[in-house]
Amino acid sequence: MKVTKTKLEGVVIIEPDIFGDHRGFFMESWSQKKMEKEGLFYNFVQDNHSMSSVKGTLRGIHFQKGDKAQAKLVRCVRGVVLDVAVDLRHNSPTYKQWIAVKLSADNFKQLLIPRGFGHGFVTLTDDVEFLYKADNYYAPEAESGILWNDPDIGIEWGVDNPILSEKDKNNKYLKDLEIIY
Image (tube, rainbow, N blue to C red):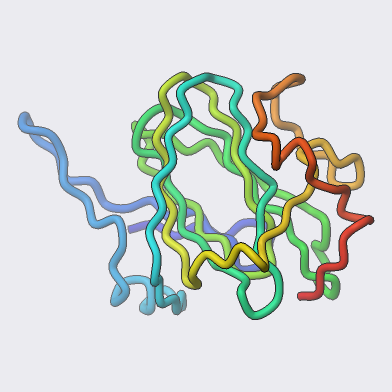
């Protein structure tokens, strides 16, 4: 397993060891023992699976507030996405900065996003399946979102007119939200 740090403290790219032969492949998508050896201590309690049928579907930028915040380990198991993490920690030197990583069924990369970050992705192919591990349960009363094209963040999604849910169309600009991390 290879763990690569990013410019956002705590956000890492994980590349698992892949063992393949003529039958297919095998990989450990999560090993608490191996992660702890890397200094990554998470207790994941919920797995989520989403499917997006059309290229250009954008989900995010999502997060949960306060003690309901979630760390996530995400990966794409079908198709390709551009996955984005945004630093929402006010006292962080990288506040409002973001990183984007291409995750695909072919590259097996995963992105570990700690609490205090917003998360979103855009599909780069049709028929995308995306998996999330979360270290806190979904709490509708704590969920929030930032508008995908917030100019104060300036994410380069690579799409001008993404397909959005009604909820994501109504997300607010970061400056209009009270977020304390």
